[in-house]
Image (cartoon, rainbow, N blue to C red; front, side, top):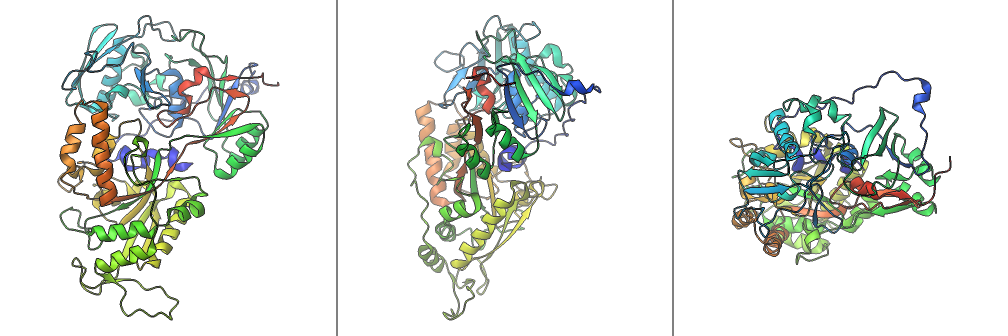
Amino acid sequence: MLFILLLCLLPACNLIQPDIPPTPSPKPTATLPPLALSVDLASDAIVVTIPIDPPSFNAYLNDTGYEALIGELVFGALAEIGPDGNYYPELASDLPTLANGDLSQDGKTVIWRLRPGLLWSDGQPFTSADVKFTWQALRDSGIWAPGFDLIETIETPDPLTAIVQYREFYPNYLIQFGGNGTGVLPAHQCGDTSRMLFWDCNFEPVSSGPFVLAQWIPGVRLIFKPNPNYFVPNRPLASQLIFEIDGDPDRRERSLIRGNTHLDLWPEEAAAIKIEDSGTATIIRTDPARYVMRLVLNLSKPGAAESNQPHPALANPLVRQAIYHAVDVGYINAEAFNNRGRPVETEFFQLDCDVPPFHDYNAGLAQALLDEAGWVVVNPNPDSDVLPVRQCQGCGAAEDGTPLVLKSYSYLEFGPEIEKAQQLLAQLMLEVGIKLEFETVEGSKLWNTWENEGIELRGNFDMDLWDNGYYGVDPTIYMTDMFDPRSIPTRDNPIAGLNVTRYRNPELAPIFDALHTPIPNNRRRALLCQVALALYQDKPQIPLVAFPDVYGVSIDLQGVAPHIYDTVTWNAGDWQLVKPVNN
């Protein structure tokens, strides 16, 4: 599913980052004799198919999904998030909190205490120097990663203690050195902190995780064997983990069904149905889902490049409410996405906020709201087969006679489904008198920088359709970037944030300020739900459906437990086959 693999084309990932040079492709291996392309499978070998080579093991450099997949096997984290949404220490001995004194009252000092006796796979000790090195390498190489730009210093008074000093409180500090394939990098192997892009350890790393790379033949496979120094007793359970590269989705599906492989990532719905009916494999869908397909509405005048000129139609909350009621989410989910999505009303569905749970499709109400807003059908002809486009008649923000025509964009990389969704939206909009002109463009055009004429940053749109979602359990950073009135990009401050809707709700600013302080979890949830309710009422964006991650899993493979807070290999050390592979 391209919307997952291309997540960092989306706004929450890349617009406020500095320009990052492309990561070099994996180093080609030496020419090998033909027999090197075959592999001797261990009796308990677990085989996973993926369509392309990972760019590297270093998930700080890319976000295709595949570097996180293998990075999780070798780069341990100080702390992670489990399937239940709770944090747990991994390489750290405990979580730093206000209660134990390892988080300061102002949240700017975090003390990480490491497990004693940790070793890298080559026998070198894992120490606080590795934690400091990871931050220094990102800083010196100019690589942006969440929260690292807020770190002022890291002190290492002893090998088991890392004291992180922040410029301001970072709400996601617990997964600062972890999460989705990222973690702590080996200082003794990787080298010059200013040359992260070119490290050999990006491709042949020593490991603090359950596995270590045994062989990588680009375009063919990656083979992993157990890390002899892994700190968890009797793990990993499997003696061999293999990632086969196969770009043919039909062949990946057949291999899984026939039992030749054991895990297929993100199969499309047609393949998922076959897998579920096979009797030899099953489908696991993450619950809750994470990636929300939504309509992004521009509340400012398109092309003005500033936020102080209101959009002639969309600045009116009645028009936004009308669009909300004109959209039949179930119809779009069925016809465009084959019912893969789960209808959602809010970005905060993980938090169970008190927001109405069902999208209210009501074309009659939509038309009444548009009438009230001063966008009316002029001289209706009940005998005509042509649906009329509404015009401004006392709408107050445009000249009378201006037609209600909106330009909508979506991104090419998602695939044909999103264009189908745009077509359906245009049909639904026209049924209430709104003409929707839509265009599918490359994500690099839609989400480019201000200097490079990014469509959204510049505000050169009326409505956009794309999917996105926040990682982890705390959406503070994500929501601040998207909806804080101080995060509106302008000509004078094009990197202020990603509030490309130009949504201004002054009541949210103090809420976001409070969320950027260390407060009890119940208070944090209550504030986040206040944001959720404001967004539901104001509708600067209209969430439609949330997409789960989908995995095809052999019935012979036990232990796979995908969830939305980490990559599927988060617990690969617990994977095992219930019966040997037939060789």
